[in-house]
Length: 463
Image 1 (cartoon, rainbow, N blue to C red):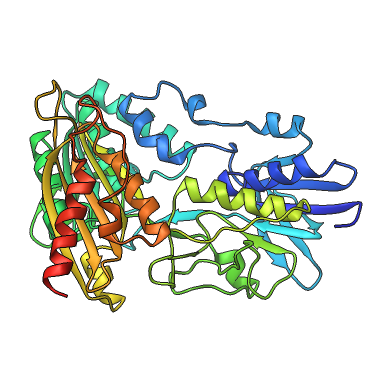
Image 2: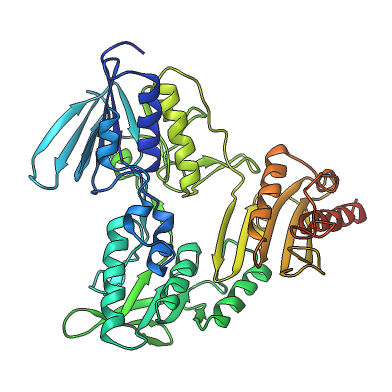
């Protein structure tokens, strides 16, 4: 890269600012000018932490901010907050941005462009879905507005009612947060079980835990309308069969890549609507244009296809890759195996790799093995139950996926499986893994290895 060039970043959160910071470490301001546009007021924050802020585990909004705009500016990055990029002109290599404060628009040329526009929460086109009292959970501003409403309603009424629409990761986490805030909570979802990222037999454990917390679950319930009162505020959520009164409605329906700008610029998108990149995070077919974070699709290391996975871990890694490459180094992001963890109260939930339906859709023949075990030696105080489910390819025995649901100490065991998946190990090879053992931490046979032994037996029986 020559001297006096400009790097323009569209989006000031994980991927965008990781890219800017990595490039700055490798190139001085005189060699590379970095301009970052962020339509909100915050940079480098953890959206994943918002449910825990609402629930009271995190005390302050500022605890979720890794680096403020002022801190980035002090490191030589020209961060322009409350400024939205509205157009990308690839032919003339420039972006058009509009200030939310002044309304002024201006063009900024670039030599290197980083698109890190994130994802947008799903908001179905239903009557009343945009009414006051209906909240999404995507940005810190969303979190501030929701928390203010949560506190106001709790002060105004005893045990106010909340309806959470969607029983995925965000929906389940928000339901727990609201229960802890003293709300009566109902969770609605069109699926037949919460956490569709698990197989049904594992998802039922989550449903049981939610009911045990006092959360009402209505599965197989398609929302048709958000009913509003005379003042225009949400008062209930309607399905085809029922009416669920609510002072507060939270949408937890997941997200989609925010790629309207990229689409208008003619950049390549995948089936999920995310930008397609090469291993270096360069947008395919476009030199000097890069993308990372929730607006891209990633390679699935098991199927070889692409998928949309909105996680801060991937966004930060991809940003590092982009910044390193723009700064003159070399880095790649090979793909993912689909690892995720969450919790409902003290129930921990983890998965990596493929679910049964995903494996079947990808054309795999497979066996499954499910075991019940404990987090510690059974005789040791605090030993808690957990269930491990493992998928292995028919005949070869290659590990295809693992799901774990249990109490304290369960979820992070999925990391062993994630490493095994990435390495292409068979379940038989996994049985010989030298995992750490002491009674306070695991049984003599770790639950993951017990599942691997059972899966190995299933593979041999069907060979």
